[in-house]
Length: 111
Length: 114
Image (cartoon, rainbow over the protein chains, first blue to last red):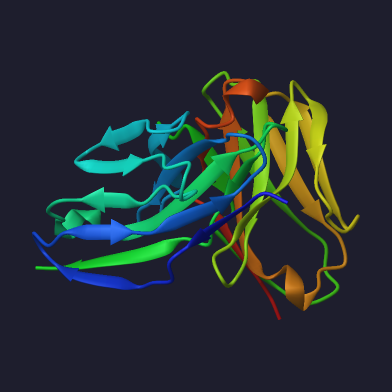
């Protein structure tokens, strides 16, 4: 079945460091791919998305590129801030109108 | 003004009890969901309602029963609680079932079964 695999956290970085959070997927066809973010004490929020191969989603300095050949959708940011500390979830939308989430990766950014 | 609100935020209860979690959205959305986040942080869909009609019912014990009195509300009732039910439960909504990628989540209900 369809699934999403994310790197295990926590990921701990210093402010202004480069961030990569890996995400790979298994799916039939060509699903849409998403990154959601969960700040402490809040629900998940859509961060960015890509709907077809080679699309790049971007928002708030975060980027992710839909790579069909490697079935990946890695999240990157060039310079993280303390306020980026959160849990990040990779997800795919399958053909049955469901979102399938990865296990989440906690990011901790130190001043 | 909170878009998707769920209550209570924390719920601690004994095994065997029956409990409910309430969810309300003020976004005018047609579709609402319940997700369960287990201790390993996996987030899995349980149910989805579109205009008060059940459209997704994943493999969930029948001790879990969703109720949608109107399209702005989706409550989750759990009978005979078990230790394994301990998790964080998230309510969410989307404009319609085709807009599932743009989910609005509540802040979660942490259920602890002792």
